[in-house]
Length: 196
Image (cartoon, rainbow, N blue to C red):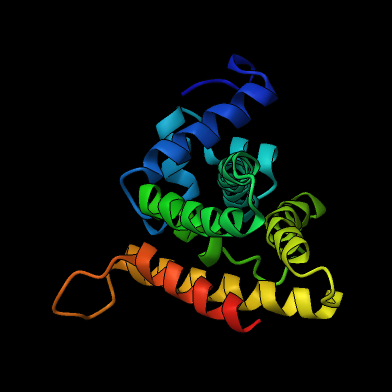
């Protein structure tokens, strides 16, 4: 077993989160435990509790890392697009494609539960950043809409894209022919925006 002084606190955080990330490349987080992570990095579970606070917060840090990666990809596709309408589609496609590439990490984002604890501000800010991108694009497309209307439209679109993505990742469309989630997203956005 590694001793506490083998790594700095920052190195241990990085090593732990990188180990969780690699594990989630192939396996569900349901197969993880504090003891399993500690064994994979050569530490005892109590060391990870000292660093992260508890297992729940350790997983929340893994969620934060995933959200940071998704956010960076989303910003890149939105920035690249000159047209806000096209940027909205690209943002939705990016969300879907990220989930397809990283299904276990993406699922952890939405299945992680704080179990009654308050969501830390650093995590709330990440969520606000992601939803803020969508709201900004909608405000640009429809500047006459109120903040309430923009907020509601953003949640309708996000919910729809999220549902399509969830069914795509889990392959739960229950259709005889393969269904392309990206085509469904395009259908959803074009029909919603036409009527909004």
